[in-house]
Amino acid sequence: MILALYRGLTTLGAPLIAYYLDRRMARGKEDRVRFGERRGVPSRARPDGMVVWLHAASIGESISMLPVIERLQARPGTTVLITTGTVTSAEVMAERLPEGAIHQYVPVDRLPWVRRFLDHWRPDLALWAESEFWPNLLVETAARGVPLILLNGRISDRSFAKWRRQSRLVRRLLAGFVLCLGQTPTDAQRLSILGAKRVGCRGNLKFAALPLPVDETAMARQAAQLGDRPRWLAASTHPGEEAAAGRVHQALSALHPGLLTIVVPRHPNRGEAVAAELRALGLRVAQRGAGQAVTAETQILLADTLGELGLFIRLAPIVFMGKSLIGQGGQNPLEPARLGASVLFGPHMDNFAEIASRMCRASAAEQVMDEPALVLAVSRRLADPGLLARSGQAAHDFALAEDDVLDAVFAELAPWLTDRGTT
Image (cartoon, rainbow, N blue to C red; front, side):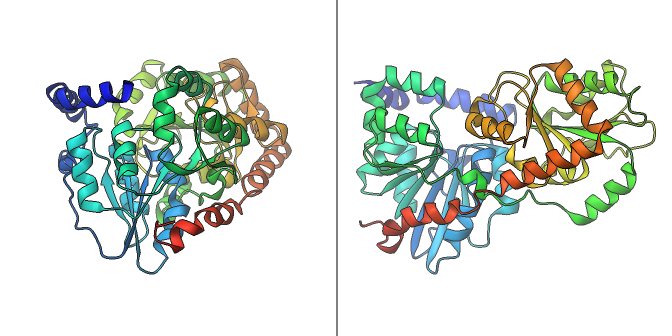
């Protein structure tokens, strides 16, 4: 009943959906040039041979799937089609996808657009990353006999409670999956409770991710500007956290002369607003997106550019991961850990709860409960090179401890890859 109602609403609600998409377009959240893809209109021809379609919701999920994409794309006669739903993820994929892989925007979940997409691409196998379940897309894919496999499935406490209230719908959606691999044993157990038929856990694919890329020339140029100034990084920040980073800087600057705070907003298009907010606190800001160089007087380097997080993590020995001081679920702490940074994050790490807990137990990260605690944690590391080195090494060792997860996952995928999805 719920699925039928959803299908009816998404079919009859075309004018409202069009209005919603127009609003997103006006805010820069849709790609004007490639907007046809959101209506299922392809911008590329379907290649010959096996097409493995991998869907990842946005930038974080798509980056975590890059090792999977690269291994699949290396198979003779196989093309990977990856779909995402955000402009930033499309920009990152354009830079990081292996040769031959194809990116398309995922069609909006209306039956005519979903069917147009599937009619054109005719995938042999569909891999779904994490937890974004679009009913029309999943049901239509399964109805065409395309094997669906959930990779790195994540069911948060909130999602689990929501899906249990909609048990008939989620059972119908999960029925289309021939295999569901959870990130953790808890995720696998929740998938089973919700109705998934074949469930397993072979580890978290986030451990298989490659180190964030860096432009060596840009890094050398930026390192020369920064010199030997003490510094720390607030990475992938969300609204409210940039101002918090500015206040942390103000609390620390007298104790640590020459301190530079680097702020990398999760969404670079917020750069102007963030710069204004920080300057309103009385801070001297160099805005990288505006081409402003760091000088001896600069207090905050605002790196409001896309795809340079790897550069700034390499330049900052202390990294606080955003979306965690404000209660929104956290960002991936393995990204700085893999590069040997001393990792900090706030109390709200719901999206990475298991990893965050394990990192803290292994002294590979420290969780701070509020802004004053962040001041103390950064200050301790700035004042104690031994602590900084030990915590960075522990983070690095933790991030590399499960780098065999990709082999384990591909062992599970093997039957559908060898038989081209006919198992």
